[in-house]
Length: 205
Image (cartoon, rainbow, N blue to C red; front, top):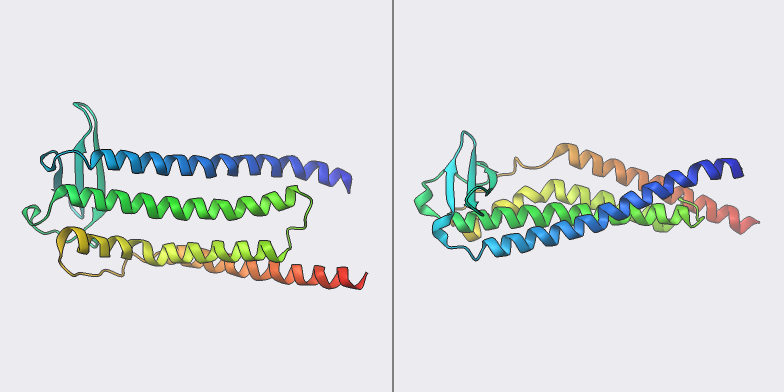
């Protein structure tokens, strides 16, 4: 038994360290992106440009003589209307800020749940606990919510703050993301059942 524990724990420690780096790195990167966009938001409207592609809009702003920052959004979430009918600056900020906040908040929250599970294992606790089952359930829920709502939220914010033209597109729902979230929920049920069995076993000793 000790031999097995010796082989397993170093792997979990490396995994926990990687999750720590990913967690705090994600927070740092989100803060950096938000600060960058707030700084870009101080630039005059004239510097921002909107360009129609084949199926996407490209909103760009120069950061220097040689560096330009751009964001892209599909026509499904931003109608291919005349660029004179909206402000390119508003479009850039809405798309960039919304994508950064939604992606990184979902990522950071998910990493946090997994990090707690690995931390429990490293502390010597059984992975089959009610707390870990709850963490897995939260992870599954956040994956499903992001898959269902991320593009819809972007769509609504574009309507409210950029175009003023009501056009909701539901094609941005990620079926693969929803399936993954449901599978995680199934695993959370298994962990919960394992935890209940462990409690029943401990209570009989």
